[in-house]
Length: 462
Image 1: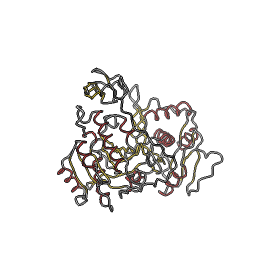
Image 2: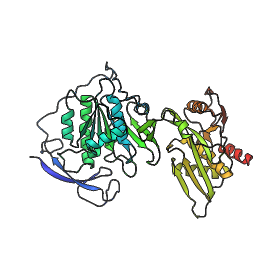
Image 3: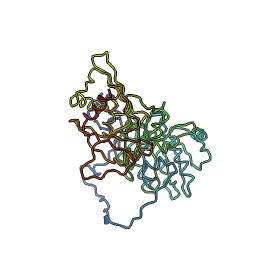
Image 4: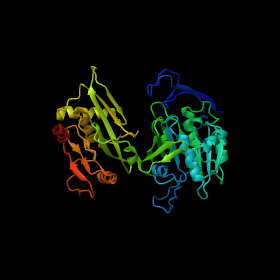
């Protein structure tokens, strides 16, 4: 007879404790332990006192090189979504889409299912655990997708869902909205707990691999912006997509942070409208649409998001501070990176900003994470301090070292080509590494080897 055993699981990190306590020893979070009941197998089971009399079956090995044909991807027709997925959806793969509440996760999943269902011999199922069928239909009518041949269901029991999908006529694409609402009745814990999310995802992913359908899981996020539930959930799936943006802002960024079948850090840009999410084919032109030339404190950064070059405007404001500790406010960039750039400007170039309030913003709602933005940030700060604008036809990129040198970054030619395509005539960039050919672009490249050279340009104009 199997007997029940009670333990306490942290809902933040998944750590297991033998007894309840107010603070988790694994992650330090308070009041996150919930009681869960698990079945403990007989003593002869795996990990028991005696070895089981029943032996496991042998595992067969095959050579690494084989004649397995590469499965054709399922293209949804949403160009930005297909780009982030690596060119389409791979049969038998599992994708996890996370994002803040109201950011558009369910809208994106429904649009993708609707477009895929209109492809030849592609059936799609949308299973909602948060909305009723009437509510999903209401949203589909608002998006203009009411006529799409998508099979709808409202269910939360994984046992029922697996019984429905475990057959030869299973749909090619299945959307689960959301994984935090699913539950397995063999477990006593509530839906959304670490144990339920882990077990539910494992069953659904196993079935997707076995039957060969593509599984799209919509996931909630915590207040820190991480996928709610166990971290192992992100390891179990093949692709993890984060939907970024402000609910009050019309632009949305779909970013791939893990992809076994494509490039990571690839982004897709969408615009939220009354008719749903619309694709933005040229994000650079969109982010620079409201840019005003000859304004101090603004610099255009030529960045790379995955394989796509993206130009964004970096804005800085420097003002006298009445406080003993000046403010440092950053939107869309790392605060620690700004502190480093300010320290290098002061220590290596003699630019004093210690008594100034510094505000930095990446226009358009995009979050920049690559160090190639250092030079553009430094130029925006110097421009705001001297009240002298950066040339409006120039783009900047380059990494700043702690000694003040400007280091080369990758994919410089793609950045320059994107800038030339949008009408920019000059680029301030790091020196080209020795032995590397000059990029074949129709744009004047002005090399900056040290931050002193950048500071001198604004002091000369002043």
